[in-house]
Image (cartoon, rainbow, N blue to C red; front, side, top):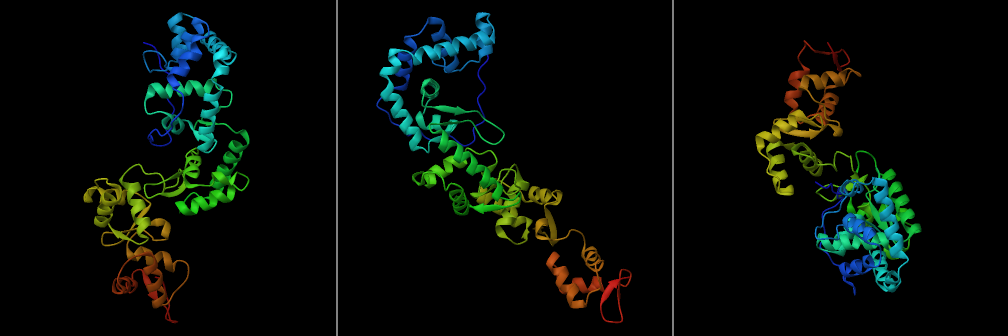
Length: 358
């Protein structure tokens, strides 16, 4: 069975096709292919999925089909593209290519590949035709997927480079734990885009450019940060619980956490399962009866006695100072703290009235 070309991971969800052109992409592709050699036409048809099937084939699968090397198939493909670019039909299609170039420029001059193709057409067959036109057209440049960016197309080298640099600088302004509102991120991004045409400084283009990045992303609450940040990545109940408690900015009961997950994210979160996940994850600290806080807030795990011991290891403190310090780390009543503090097996009241370790 013929192998198919690898489809890159989609950086964002599909969007509805909105583009409208004076030409038909499928008809134009067919016209351009008609003027080259039969072998070149066959290779390009298979490579771009322009035949009876929409499947795009790899160089290897075509080579196996004809019993020739992968490199030979690549040569035929390259030769076919050059033949098209030298053809009369290509010159006559200049207006169509110009129209397509203007459309890419209207999207921001540099656009994620999947986003662009989904904007251009609503069906796979027509998307294949547009992909073919982008490859053949001399105004379009494809940047391969890297560790930092998704595959993308652009029509302006200078703008593309400035956007890449701005995204890298924007990433540097974020810390590993930080999340910011969408408005705040846009403000920071625009600051890094000072040298880019201000005509592009609108919300749609900014979002499109942000979607180029693999290292910057947003969570379901539209808070942005580094893609690997705990408050951005969401893979299960634990991550949703983290977002819920962080959003509340105060300790929450595990039942309330489960209910909030269901309400905010439309994810069914069973109370018992949520409680179990909170207990297992070191990001959460039990600070009261069923109450969980984030460890990053400075709350300490363990029973009240352990919290007092950790506090008094540093230096002796007065009764009121112990109460204040413990309540910064645990949600407990004063009486619970005092009962533990007066346990002479662990703590000792000194002559000056302060408490230390026994």
